[in-house]
Image 1 (cartoon, rainbow, N blue to C red):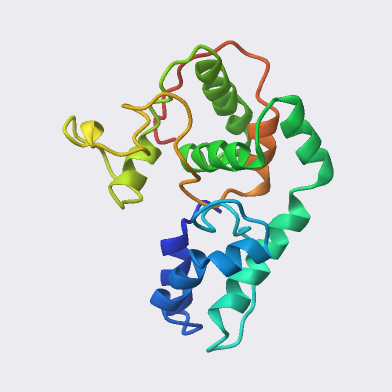
Image 2: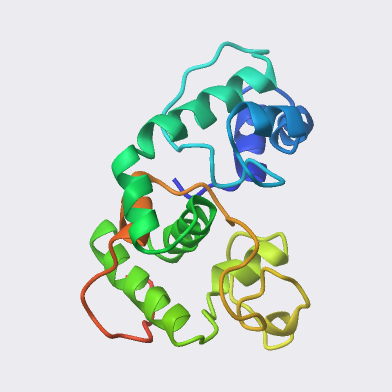
Length: 195
């Protein structure tokens, strides 16, 4: 959970399933995206994280197709209705869930983190989520410098208001549910302490 497409591609390559480059190419192929109803420029966010078994040299379309198909099954009609009730497009829900996913691996915290982001969006505040900046920098971890927080990118939520243009990772079910069901708190901030 929480891997981005590049991390998935590298994991598949390390496992000898398929070259990362081939998987990356499929993830942005318009025909693939259309086939799975992904209304975005990339499959980022729509590859459901789960344990999958693939034989070596499996076609990259089959690998990502199975993951995208699982996403379609797990994002239920009830979740679609909940997104509509929140006045959010599915792409916005997946984008928000991906940020929540990268902010915490502790499922119990996710509704609170979601509440912070929902409250900030409602107030038109910047999300100021470090994982979005890391995504813009093509990194997955590490501290950010003041200069890095200024990077010009539509994914830098320290500079832009609202959600970035798309997901920064592939969220699991707990993060998707949290994005749709923020905790009943008025918090605007949280601090990650590493524990």
